[in-house]
Length: 478
Ligand code: UDP
Image 1 (spheres, rainbow, N blue to C red):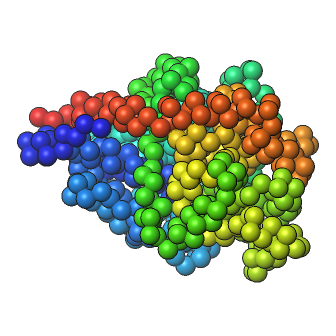
Image 2 (cartoon, helix red, strand yellow; image 1 turned 90 degrees about the horizontal axis):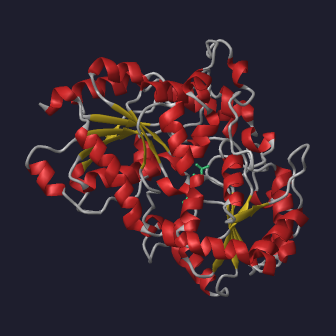
Image 3 (spheres, rainbow, N blue to C red; image 1 turned 135 degrees about the vertical axis):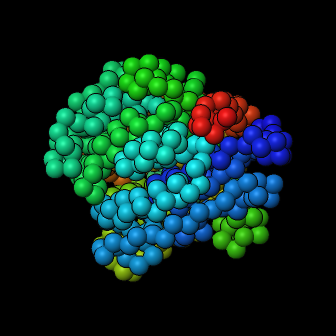
């Protein structure tokens, strides 16, 4: 991206932009990447988060470091949260509701920071439903940055549906079914449990449902930014802008992460992984990671493990322990599994340098939970997908990926949504080696051209930043 940095700062025309992401890694990393694109054009960023989450961010490139300040707001703990839990990665899914309650207590400290710093723009996530009135009172324009795709927002529906007809705080049940708005392309069949699996967690997190949170911020913001490029889903950008939100909706590109985010070449975590990958054949390894939030049940872990074993491919599996599972990690996996797959498979129970792994030529396929952040990372390297959506937007994403022929979903039981070891192994074989699977491999290679085109994505981010420059708060522009 073309850098205007010194000029804007020196001539005093630079913006001051406050970034305020939700406390999930899949959120604060794209917010961090967007901050870098804004700073690249010479603007100053205050990146507001909790101390522990700020520590989790990757290093800034030296030329941007002077432009990005980290503002640490002490995390207001909740009695039901473990010590030091400041992100969804720190707590099992059923505790995210407490995290949201604690997060809502950042309202006062954030309001005070905004009052004292009077930024030109505030870019926020879906969660702070209390933020629009504060920003309006202070005359600060707001942008809602969605890490979800435009099609997912489209599925959630117009603002009126998101906000609901009843007071959602007293009637959370109202939201335990998907919104009445279901305009998802009729040629994409989807099953209910895939869309809204774990709907209790999705809709009843804290006392304020996520739909209501999202509706409030969409209603209160001046502009919406979406982590995607326009040509991927043009009809959905149009639908949001012209019919559902009736306000500008900008793609900001996919905001790819730097490969070095996973540690440098000599990083002690990366070295043994790289050595193992180097021993495997080109394109032979299945990489499995199911995101930072939703864990698998014990039964699902078993079927997935036995499916990997049946497939006979080498694999690298990042496994998050299900809440309440045995303390001893080995008890989580089927009897004798580790012994039987020794040398052929690695189970990693800690954080993995995902981007580095996906970039390695030995990896041939990504078995994913369909989190948009992870899929972006796979497509950058042209990897086809085996799809195992777990909750929220993932079922919808999965449908779109199937429609685009970049992946195949592991078949689930229509009734209870369970899957079997055989369906895991069959889907892996189809996407990895079968002749009929060539279509997915070819399509993924084709996507690499677009997902790997950094200039294209930086240009889209640049158009959004230009909008911010042209629509700064009127009181400050004078
Ligand atoms: N991630 C990682 N190492 C891991 C697991 C996840 O670096 O062991 C990163 C991954 O590269 C991606 C993000 O965490 O950037 C997960 O985002 P995504 O949208 O895929 O899923 P979420 O965790 O939000 O469900």
